[in-house]
Image 1 (cartoon, rainbow over the protein chains, first blue to last red):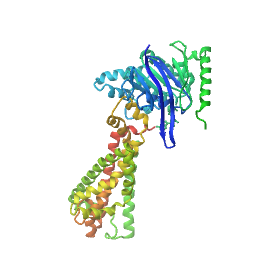
Image 2: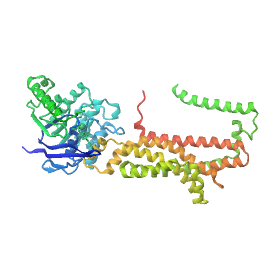
Image 3: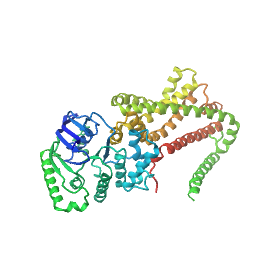
Image 4: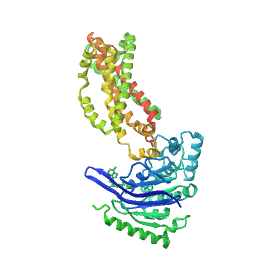
Length: 262
Length: 254
Ligand SMILES: Nc1ncnc2c1ncn2[C@@H]1O[C@H](COP(=O)(O)OP(=O)(O)O)[C@@H](O)[C@H]1O
Ligand SMILES: [Mg+2]
């Protein structure tokens, strides 16, 4: 099968006042079409930098990023992004917020079709009835749901998420995992999820990439051998527990090498 | 009940204030050339009603025009400073230095530069005195835009212009209107400054000065009241615009 995302030998350093700060070091990640890649690693190791490289928001010093057999040289319309901060626009209703990418990507699309598409997604994530509310009228979890809808409203083939559930409480987070799982079943997209929650990476991922401490390299890759229609209970089964232990050990090694050593 | 309180309380406060003022003048037996009392004002208004209308209009249009130019130029400078570090580093000291000059000192400079151009000088002054808060607020609003806000559109290949219109500009509107409330008052001060100081000026400021020249104290106080009314009118006009364009920024009360 073809890889949708190919990150080949990517090396990057930020130029800072105190000299270059190497962030990524010969990083290799491949994600087949339709697969879900979870990326974990010590904080500050370069995970957000990785998402910006895949999205074409910046160029790596060395190495190549390929999407769909094309070299990434800049932003492309087939990418969707979601962040820890839902960044909804307060002057727009939830519905108008979800429509926003369509205004850029498909300016000719009739308004009725845009709204129908957005409403369909909002209903899938359980936000039916909230489409005319302002973002500040919603809870944190609901805002993140709306942010997810916005990220996939234009049917991107890659969804990039940078710790999207990091600011939510544990129960809301688990709710959103299930929403994410259902969305994936309904809408095909390839996904890169940055997370610091190992259970999240096992529940949602087909593969989990463990990055080393800064500068990040691919330290370990775990194939998640759980059935596609997972329920939360699966996390308590021995197979999942073994994977979590393995990942926990890998993170410990990653932190030891460099990581946040203050 | 709520409505009653909202309207009745301010009116009562104004009435009490007027009564105290009247009583103060009456108790001290101040003559008219020392201090006018509220009861002197309606006759003064009536006597000069045509002048009040004409001069009030002069003051109003020049203030609004000066403020309008300040909005355009101030927003332009703010956009430059918000998007370009170099522009920010270059313009900031100039702006701060200019803002530090007490604007009253500019009146004779402008009067000498553009002799006899009374309308032009007045509008220029209203503009000069009021663009600074707008420039600074727009500049800060744009430069503190969180990168994620830009990235949601930039990652789709949106142009800088699109990002500006769809995200950056609306997001700075609350700060912009905060500054505009300060600027409208400043522009009003600028207009009056020139009107009062210019030898053959027009506008409410000039009317105030003619009252002074003729020792007509009731007229002077009547002008002050008219100025206050016009100032309030301008301020509330900005509030209404804010409601319309940045009403979303208001936290729902309750
Ligand atoms: N624009 C930038 N300029 C300089 N240093 C940066 C920049 N962005 C991130 N960094 C630094 O690079 C490192 C990796 O950042 P990031 O990719 O955000 O890490 P992570 O998301 O894994 O926490 C951090 O030490 C961070 O301080
Ligand atoms: Mg990060």
